[in-house]
Length: 167
Image 1: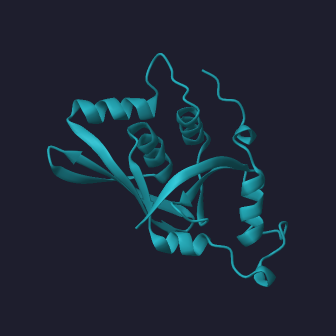
Image 2: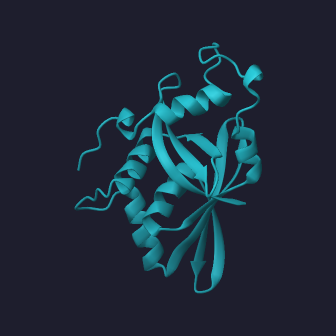
Image 3: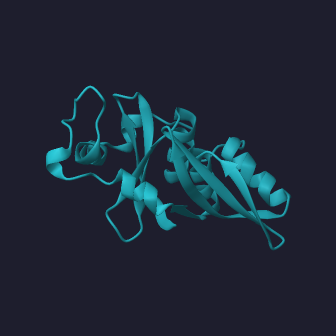
């Protein structure tokens, strides 16, 4: 497993979906994961230091974990099948480590709140790496943006492309 951190959020207009961009620690490799708008909002609010008077879902989960004597130790992004990513939240409760199956987007939103480390399987980072330039499709190849073109498109996007998140 390779440690990653949230680099940014972007919006893929072609897929009409938010994307969380994870970057390998100490490297330029990235792992884009397409997520839902609710999770993108939760991640963006935490990254922006925005809090609400009442707890939102990911804040509630943090309260429940604490109330049950648990702490989120780390998040593991373990694999992908048919464009669906899988993750586990590793929780320490009185010295017992518990692995909970979860969506990466929810896991990342909770990890940011818990200041927990995030790890991704190296195979995911390898698969997300752009191939040699001549083999990359053009940005609008009818199948979506991939490879180096995707990476460049994601680098140019800004968090505000996701829309406004107000408290």
